[in-house]
Length: 302
Image 1 (tube, rainbow, N blue to C red):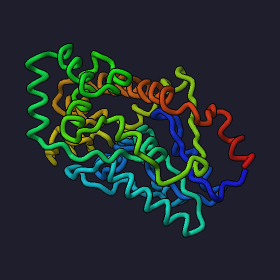
Image 2 (cartoon, rainbow, N blue to C red; image 1 turned 135 degrees about the vertical axis):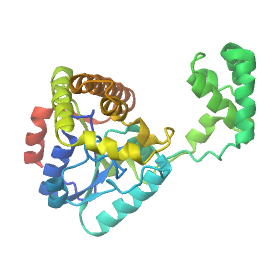
Image 3 (cartoon, rainbow, N blue to C red; image 1 turned 30 degrees about the horizontal axis):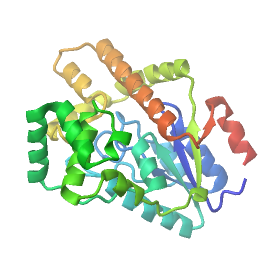
Image 4 (tube, rainbow, N blue to C red; image 1 turned 90 degrees about the horizontal axis):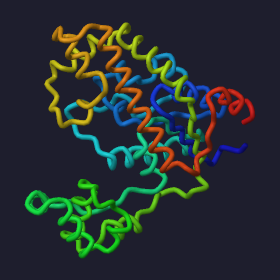
């Protein structure tokens, strides 16, 4: 398989072994790795977000890991712009870019492009939300489909968030959000990508999640969260939603035992993995599915 002109994408649920696979693949094909995980961009939570180990980053060059401060904003658009630059740089250096992570929207952005809808003014958004509160979702949805015929084909009547977003876009821009989507294109072509989805059996994945959670607790995540909480990062920042911060915080405050924390983090992580798998089913139908036990054979055949 000739991969010299490819951009390799590796997606899988949390704890599926994406990083290890990417490192081994990079060694074989002269590749370099770019982060495609929204939590691993931040400096402060290396253990809790399962960032690559020092050994792995010494063996293979890694980009966009642990470079952003928790209090700073970092959007999907920011990631896409930086990633395109890194891909171009890696290719100029005659190496192969490998994007690795579990954030589905990052992969969607790189393969399909990012919709460039104008920023909706706060006053407009507030007005529309007040209207929604006043008339309720049922009537609000009726008003939406009257002004945006494409909404009825793409948004379920009970979906409040998507209804609000579609309404504010057509109200402000005079164009359906789905018209904006149609104009969205990736910088790259479909043939530029090799898309790999690590298809992990759920029972095995649960065991891996449980085991990894215990190791995180044993290997310094408690002190890491103590340090993080001292920063007083606003709760509306993305990193504040990282699985484990709240639970370990309760351990620090003596509200939970260590065993209870491990159990709660494991449960939340399993739920997150399930959402990742569900997202992949709906959005990654054209990806090459590889079972974990076949990953080594895949590398050997390249």
